[in-house]
Image (cartoon, rainbow, N blue to C red; front, side):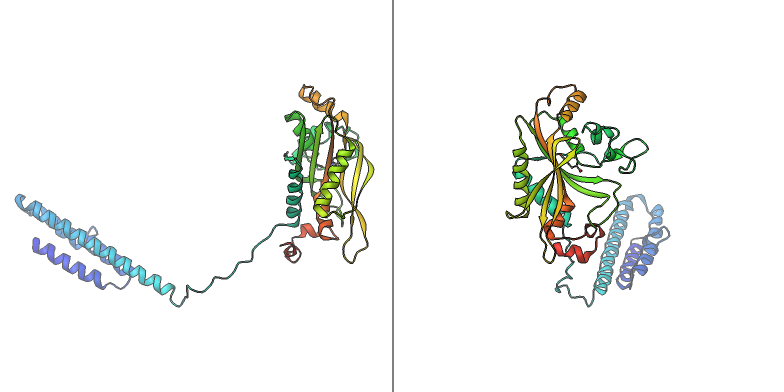
Amino acid sequence: MKDQIANVQAEALARIATVADLKALEDARVAILGKKGCLTQVQQGMRDVPKEEKPAVGALLNEARAAISAALEARREALQAELDAAAVAGSDFSMPGAALPQGGLHPISIVRDEAVRILRRMGFTLSDGPEIEDEWHCFDALNTPEDHPARNEKDTFYFDSGKLLRTQTSTVQARTMEKQAPPVRIICPGSAFRRDAIDATHLSAFNQIEGLYVDRCVSVGDLKGTLEYFLKALFGSETAVRFRPHFFPFTEPSFEIDVLLQAAGQAPRWIEIAGCGMVNPAVFENIDRSTGKQLYSGCTGFAFGIGLERLAMIRWGIRDIRLLIENDVRFLAQFQ
Ligand code: DAH
């Protein structure tokens, strides 16, 4: 039996040393260690080994199995290494890799980040609210009555549930005041949606930065100074800015702000970039009525909503707002 074991081991090791590929190696493993393998068959002879010799023969069998297993594994590694080497033969790993083109930020993101940076430096903090809104936060709280044209089916995307895609980021004014006691100094960049016909200056999904400043004794002078400072910080100190009287239900008085666009090769023209005004006391009353706390009546404040696409158009002299959503890389690559 001992000789048998030694023979099987020697033959097995010789066979393993000469197999040429992984398939032949697996065949060898099955032929040696498998259920009907030669070592397994020798092992069955243990039955007939006298009791006192069993430990010695058993130990020999174990050694043979271990030596064969180790040889199988070593050969498998060697064959695999040959395959790996063949797979990369001819490759030069010291060659520099192909440079991947690096992406850049979209112009809307660039201008949004700059605007947020300036406003945060002025003491505003970021606030947020959902894009799918209820009518209360989008309209009622903001003193926009049931029969106001902005609420019309033709102008607003409604869901069957009665919710809607917010038509303005002004929703965040109401949401912030419901959560927080005055004073308030927040901004909220975000998307807004309207059933607007798309043309060179209008999109149906667009971006705004909302701002709200509430305290005691806030004046129109604060509003004007803040927004003029902001626009000059963004576009340069020579930027021409004008405030035009306007109407918004949630502010009184209200203004629209225009910035003079002077792009090379284009006649200078005023571009409307924001709505703003002094918060209508009716809005403060609505908030107090809904929260049941008398926190806002008696406050004063100003609010503004700036169109981010419009800021980008002025910043880079972009003539057509639609370029900002077409994702043409020839256009976008210019901003990297
Ligand atoms: N929400 C207005 C719009 O989308 C813009 C606006 C006007 C926002 C006046 C304000 C504001 O906060 O006070 O047209």
